[in-house]
Length: 412
Image: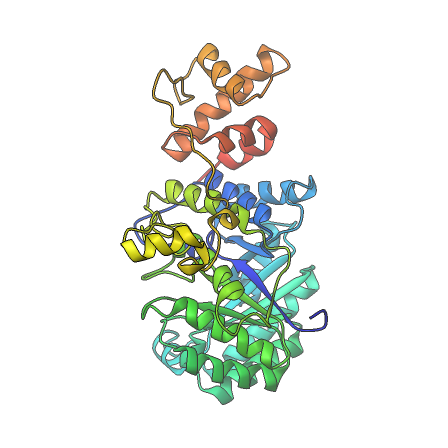
């Protein structure tokens, strides 16, 4: 198993997930997602857009957390277009950035009908190659090249594009099933051909327009591994993402661990599913989107049995009707709900009520001055989030007040 290629997770909740129409995350909420992903052992978070100005302070603040050792293992990677201009702008705004994905369209449909003559097949490769070389020259430690609409790209051209990306210095190629039109059969065949021809690690980025997103992601990962290459599956917490969404983080991990025939494939051993319940509940609250009751692993019915036969069988031996244990996902502990007096911290809180809230969290301030400073930040955080803060957010602000201040600061 040691020498076999591995499957890693690159979560894109803070990039593709926040592009879900009609919803958004605050910069504090994006930071919390990064912290939970780090706790979960995820390889990389695509944490935002380095050339989008309202992201600047948030991105730099999270990279400050990297320097402080708060993110113990996770990489924070940005997303930009595969142009030299975007690369230069990214380093100007986010000088500490070390990991990025550079994206450009590769299908005939998009080259002809999206670029409208601005780029042709040859200039797409030329533009991408120049961007990769510039990014490497400016100091990126890892570079992923995204072939947008790869699933509708002619195979011969996709292989040529990938070879040129590798020659320019890319570390991996992101195969994007941008419209979710692949099947597990087509994506396996295409990625196996691609990985064998180019010998480069493959990222799998799938969408759920046909309801096949997890199956396609697993099939693509299997294909790359079968060709001898490491693979990186792109996920979003709770399957958020544009249109019908991206591959659900927890479903992908469960499929890698428990689906028939996948036991010979090596999932990143750092992955810790114990954080699953916490991160999914938090993302649901932050996005304002309920977890479906039938969501794998974390839905309220995922371990519920009503049928007499099923209930009897599960009580005799859970393995009769449960493929994995709820404890593995961090479920099963009683959750306490306050039904009496509750003091909350909000944008109009006073110092006495505020200190009561933090005393319950066992956070002790050195003096009134420190408490007043954190109170002011908590007020801003409530305005920033436009909803009550959860305990972990309150603890984060108290632990890293100056970084929190940077996250909340935005100037048009």
